Length: 621
Image (cartoon, rainbow, N blue to C red; front, side, top):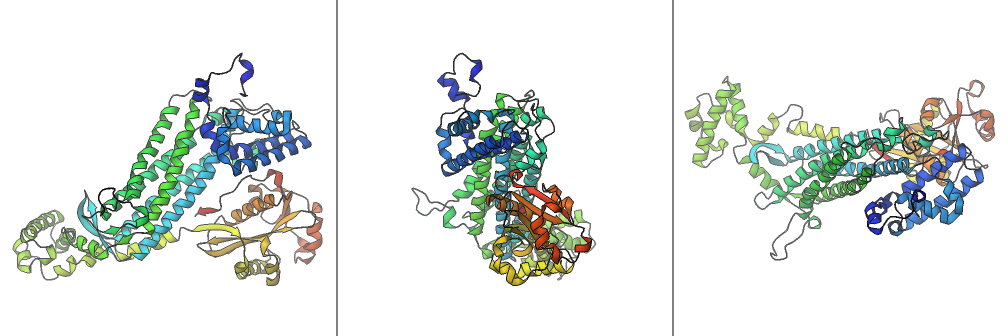
């Protein structure tokens, strides 16, 4: 049944229904719609629209529905409902009867879809961010492996100057870092929750929208209801980011297609990213790279279509906005697939160093070095440029490279040239000369690789027994400065399942534990980060990881005693009373050296307000 049928005396005909319905593509947001509905049920419960019993029944049914959707997501698209919101509501009513009809109180499909879409985009962006990190790491590994391999650099597809193959790799690392930065910026701007904005004018119920935003893992709530339901800037930004990154991948693909050609022969692609010909048995075609190049236009097209759809749309919501999804639902997975495929090409590539070096020595690529040599002899560059041009003509006429000309041939054109010209024209000397920041000298390229590797990757995960030593060192350090209670290493072994750790570039640099008391109350403690690491964000990731873990364990409340209440407040903790923490006071406070002059603040986090769904567990700093 349509959610809007009461106004009409008859339903839509089949042609209009097929034209109008969005479930065939927006079904991919089923999990987000259910998660948003759980949060909305909590909001309605807090303003007494739903009783505690009604709230619990709805949430239980929604989580049951979530499990069904996760088990068979494609089945949602076949239910025949108008859109994903209609499907979830119908399925909910089927489970709890008329109670399911109360959930839409104060909510519109307009703020619902805007919220679902942002949640989907945040989750997908996190996956793409991981892929950008992975391909960057593969390029860095290739740059290290081929360090010293010389490649001809090109302008206008003509050999220009020699460069290190690693320098070529690092050019694409720079592009990928900009792609990651743009994606991070786009996610930061979209991290606002529209739910509670209603159809366009806001909701008539006293919903705490900031708490609702927190429930869903958003940084904050949107500030204007008209804008909240009609804003699709985040779609444009993501498509723009995807388009620019695909442009980079397309250039990368074109370079390798040329390098892989029989005419160049600089590289050989692995069998797993190439195909053969149905007619010519000798062929090995770079299909993966050609498809990356081809799919770029597909992403560009989605970007152009979205801009045209939004052009001149009046406020607030219009049905045109239904066209915002199919393009993005195709573009982002296409971008992700191309990142994975490009990485596969990098991982399996073989570089023919002899062929690249021979090519770098041809084409008079050391002509600029000869011009610089003349400048050092006191000849103005423009005149030196002309002299070198004449010498290139001589070399072409002789069928030689510049360094193969005799001294007499050099001096016949310019008398200032002496024997010391030959070391300048050597290939390695040409590379060494480009030693300014960003140049292709070995030292500069080595510095670039080192700098890129220092763009730290932070990973948060559950601890294991291999981490005990690192955890012990962190806890003992912070215990000595009075911030944590000391713990024996044997205690950490027995309670390793309580701990989570952060890794920076594979090394454990932070830890925290989730201790569960007999009553079901839980405490985050032993939180500490290596002070010499210098990588920010680890404490936040550890706390968020443990809150997700606590929610999975069906815990109701997490507490902390802290001297940095502002840090925990930003993560959703509220101040509490120590009198409400009898287990903590009895167990640990008696052991604390600061017991008589305690300056810690009690804070707690109620897990029915915890961010729902998976949180990103990787970031770049």
